[in-house]
Length: 619
Image 1 (tube, rainbow, N blue to C red):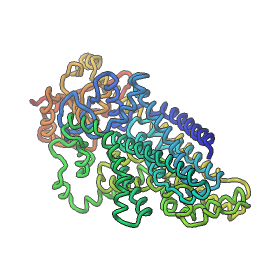
Image 2: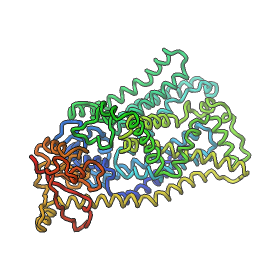
Image 3: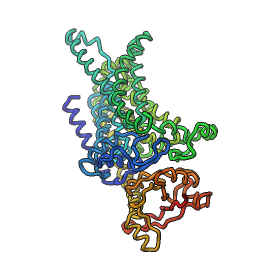
Image 4: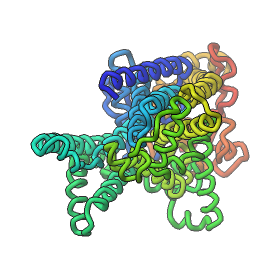
């Protein structure tokens, strides 16, 4: 592929992805799920001069529990820093924050194109089929619904996906071998000069990889699995290059230690900040989440997750949690929003990954009979796997780093954090895995169409059928589901706009006028306890704390812990946890919670029908 063709192809993919995401952003106008609002809210506080602080406390496991609250005791800051740039330029709105995620999501589509181009080169596809696979993968990623939705929500999903893909591309390039046979063709001096330049590029690539690991660690905790992938890839490389174990260990250390040092030095300032703010450079409750038996355990106050409690649940319960986690991650995260393409990609992934390069190339050249029957298979393509890969310049399959990362991330999320993963842990780490499924699906379709073309004796080029099917299916699915997702977001936005009105001076005046007891949060010094503290804080611009799934006595203890104390509780009537059932069923201590009649918002009539509010009257 020439440089001009590469630039034009990448530019076309980026522009299509940018257009699709810009249109999608007009449908998605509310930060949903709630963690998106957290990143946006902290970015707004940063732009407004309040630093990296949050108006909501959603976890009580990391002190200090007070306001102003330093942000990111568990989550990480890079998405907020990216969102703050357009918010500083265009205003502190959700739409401005979306600019960053739209651009990063468009870059992910370009990275899908680049990865697919590497795959085509490694598998020795003919130029026409290689071009079709690369551009088709990029354009499919541009319209693939899971990637589109994630690209209009400024959270960690797309920045992490971009960093993972770039890191995997660099790992592949660092795995390329120097071919001694080139000495005969270009002469010793030219070979030495080219090799010296290549070593310089490799050194710069290792520095860049270290920076990428640090940036990934500033985005999601799953960066550790990306680093582990690099360690495994490098060990595989030195095993092929050296037979002696001590030589392997030495070469492996030389390759990985500089990358690790760069990553540590780049990440160190943030670790120091966490140490100052929270007393530890490590994420607060990340490991404790592995002991969760219910998703609401992240909001625990008095009943904290412990190992003894976890083991007391019994083997059957623990196995059930892992089964639920696996099913959720496969069906809800990887397949549901991407059907039918996601199903094709996942089913075909073992064959795509396990297929030897030579066999893959032979199949591809056989497939090319549909477009040019007279073209014979390349001799290198029909040779062994290592020969085919070496001649293409790749020592490992370009998909291999991404596959290793995907498998590790999936297994850890499903088996170690089976409860947290149903609340979004794997969802936000799976952006790059969706790209893997897209490329896998197009490789499967390419092989299938080639097989059909060979069987039926087609003579016209039909390589475009696979990408055409994929892109059309993704567009149709996106056109149906995007408006539905948008309506759900607007309904939530209306509800929280009505909540903001109910607790505003105007809402309090309306409540008093109708004989009720209004609440003006501008006159209330303490935080509000609620089941969606981040949305509540963003809507009202008042401090909010999470509602633990615990007894009324525990909630009263939580309310008294803050200074000034929390005097109000807001909860959805459809909350399936202990609240509001604990009050409605008369549990001990429930008499301390006095119901409030919230005034209806004239702009959003009926939006508060499902919202209950209580005044906490006990000292």
